[in-house]
Length: 123
Image (tube, rainbow, N blue to C red; front, side, top):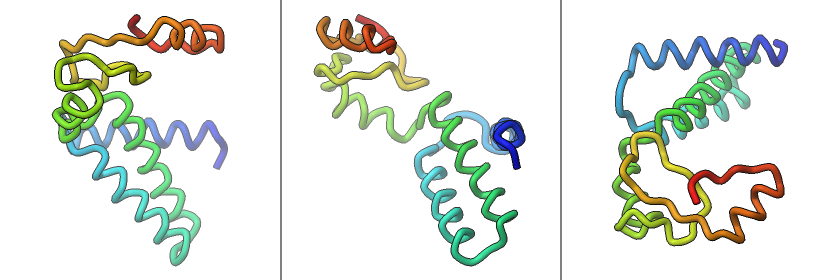
């Protein structure tokens, strides 16, 4: 399988998964379950089975990044964002679905990131 074929398979699998499981989901739990299936396939199954599971892991990673994880929003608000919308200097952007929060990235960290070619998001 080429890189392009793999990425096309990931896109197809992510779209299939969105149709089967739309809306807010426990993406992290689903991702962890799929990673376990990759480990099992690597040890005991065919390369085709491993490839199928690896595509599902990548599709879950895509969904986690683009859709967030509904089960983690409250935790992240309390522990990552100090419970009040501030981010306590944590370098990150908004998780999808986590709206209405204020993000403060220290100016020096933002300047350093921009110099490295990374836009950390809101200042």
